[in-house]
Length: 487
Image 1 (cartoon, rainbow, N blue to C red):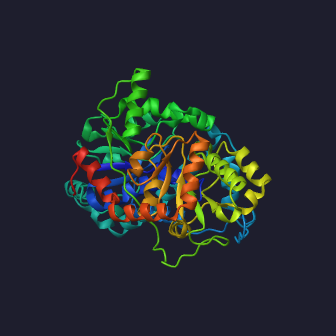
Image 2: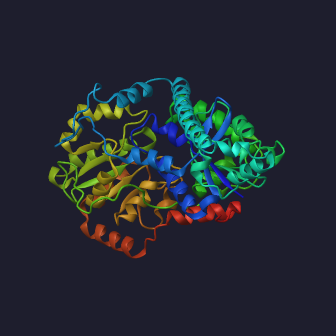
Image 3: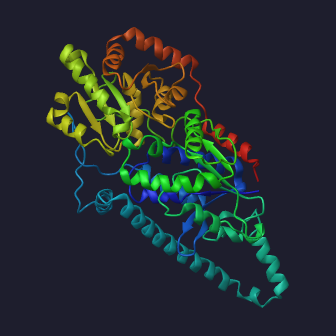
């Protein structure tokens, strides 16, 4: 049995974004551990829209692509005090210009264009693979003169499960799949206009007598369906079309939290959708991969260790950076300025926050108390986590809460929202706030800013009791649910 994992969404995302967000980090960590755990029992594939097929891609290509998202890149000047970033112009950064233009297009235009570009790149890659295989075939031209029976035996040997991944690059998985194989959809392929129909056609292999593969789907959240007010209108339409088409036909359904599992079941009951199996929750790992980070990684200019609170996430309405800004504004009015730490927003600017960003600009980022670090590298994130006094995660709705577990893994207290999945991620180690109660939240944040004994007590408890989940555990549980063993 082989688990075939559709990774097209990772490549699709990389076309439009310079750094991975939470979904890309989580899916990559899961893929890496499944690859290490299952060996030849897991393989990866990408979309070929020309032939409506899924074609094999080696793990090395996925790893190389993701590593590219983690590489430091030139950045435009950052707002806030002491910003010292290299200036990148449109002329010197054509890829950045293309991403900027793409983000301004409606989602209905942007995603088909990105898919078209991805298809062109895949076609070019397939042509190169064909040339490589053609060259190999010419070297072994005498084999073509051997009997048909002998050639058939060699062809079967080339496609059996033990065949090296390099030899399988670019092949249609329908030619390789066995009768017990499973397709894994563990990312975010929302961009496809008819994903349900596509996977039915792309996995209907001869070995299964024309029937499509069983499919396993991992759900991150249903925010576009349940709370569309916090999403781009185009995303709501795209996501609805994707999920309503895929969810009823999948054979294995997983969620990244109990809260998301409940949301899926609530949606199914509300919309009268019959699910094939109960939704199972996967344990979610902690930490992120990347190049080794030096222990002496430095903070951005203008920040000092222990002198700031940290918010790590895309700056968008749902993440509720507005609460943090309003809390800091209130503390600046009621406390001596030197008693108020800086507030760092580490993440790119997303949607529905134009008013917030304008407010920050109008007040000169609270006279330098607010610092924005856009698209931080892993080295910057490590330095920011290590150096902060505490972290803040006031999100209004989450599927999990990676920044919460990341904060705890660095031994740092997190002042976190008490909504949806966040308490699952934070356990007993966080200070929880109502993300819609600005007065109550400000008082909790004020304590974290001023009470050194509280910080020491919480950090000691985190150090002694917090047990991060390894990503290997996530892979093991998933593989066990699907009945796949190392091959």
